[in-house]
Image (cartoon, rainbow, N blue to C red; front, side):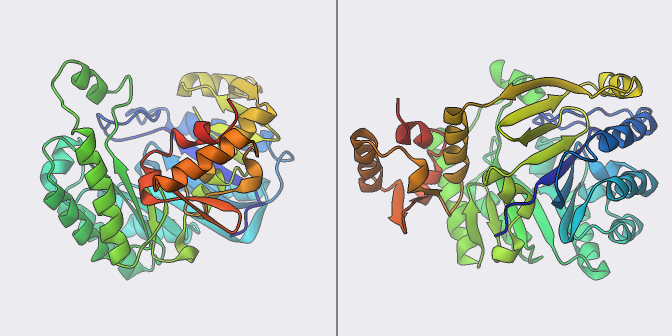
Length: 373
């Protein structure tokens, strides 16, 4: 897949309700939307000359579809007026099923979105209630049907597993419901407890108990087996696609260490061994831009060793793995590679180290094992 063009991410920090597991920055007020849109337009102009032509645009959040079409139109128009895009760009938006009535879908198509990622999370109402979602399973099914009827032919679904009280049978039934709609892409995430979220606090108080680690392993491996058995490619730890053409091009480029520009409160950017991030507060973000300054809260310059670690870490999340040339050729590391291969965590093919499904389970620790001390 092509990886040289940079990618653009826009953070929409608004939600109609806040899910108790979510650590992404968002607020539930709508009063700040006009001020945010105006500030975002100013930030877009600041980077007019700094990046080459993009070939993916991903609008995430928060809940982008909580904005009216007219606000999304202002954002899209300003992006394409000021930044350059390839003619075959992937234009994606995240959506809550409860927002996807026929008029909203028609509006998204008219704005040029050719990929949509639907935050279904489950097709089980009990699970949706537990997760604090504002849609029902029926609303999600209706939204997916409308997306197909009205012409979306690149639909992704986000699903979540390993919930307290959830059985493997219930999770596989959600997957079975999902594939009935033949989504081009599926992202399956285990429930994690992020510090500062309500779920984190409830876990610390003993009100929520995470599933045992061995059950998490069973959920992960069963997910992979089920979806691969139904024709999906397990191309990244949490991601599956019907074929290579339906990989999330945007996310794939992150995993390939491609430069990216992130705009909006809390968004991160990366270029030329430098990473920077915006203020998390909408009000602070708007204040700074209204004073004609860049809303950057922090910046770091990565060393060659840090870049190597990141590149190996990202590569080992995917079914393409990493080139042996990126890994130190010392006796100690060669022995470690052989050890990982003997234990079934990796395979070697065409001078590449490829993680197995078992290797995906330990992807966070493998990179440190493959690099010098």
